[in-house]
Length: 279
Image (cartoon, rainbow, N blue to C red; front, top):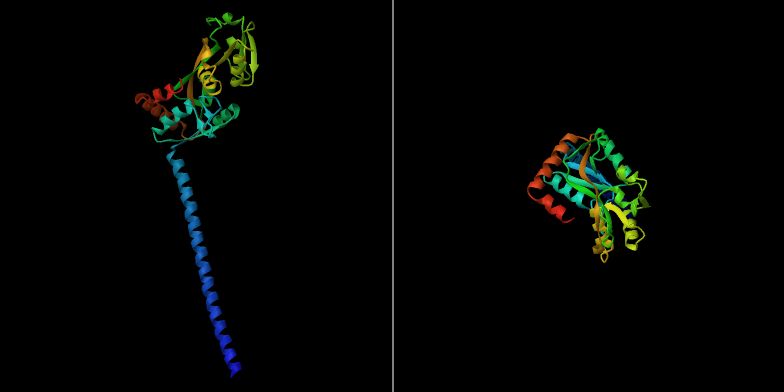
């Protein structure tokens, strides 16, 4: 009787285990199917969003060089600056999202030429029109001769500067009339901050520098000395443009959208308000 009971019990347990295994297998299959459905749904959603953004073409990729206060990173590594604020406001007013990346100038220019980026901020030149369609100008760069207020000189011609040593920055594209002037003593440094520092220390007489950049560097890094300097005069004014790559998708549409947005922020006073904060 004991043997019969044990055999019967074992048979019953085996049957129960079989049913449990069958249930577990079905449950596992159901979970796998649900995971696949969720995965497919997620992939389709992402793909749909990417395709939607692409089709709507309301996205603008901008590359710029590091050039404060026009383009720079703040203490939190956020990309800020006069040009960035203007372009953001103009594109936002016509429904565009802006993505900005700071790169060395040469690489940024190549990315824009090739259409890897939609555009770059540039001064206008006829040669560049083969790659870019230039927007309406939105601000300008004023290249000035920064000097100590105690130095009595006013720039009217380059010959006025021959008695002085002028600080410049390596690889900057200065006007040929200046860079080829043989009688002007030039002292080259790696960047504008070093140029300002040498001016403060009296190692150069004049620094050739963008006016806004000079004000930005003095306020940020040399606040006690910022009121000791003024300009002997302006060498050149250059307008800034959004240069839109002809290799970019729908570049004509983006060109028209930016100009429309720029006109809008001019009309409503936003452009003037942004510029005033950097003067």
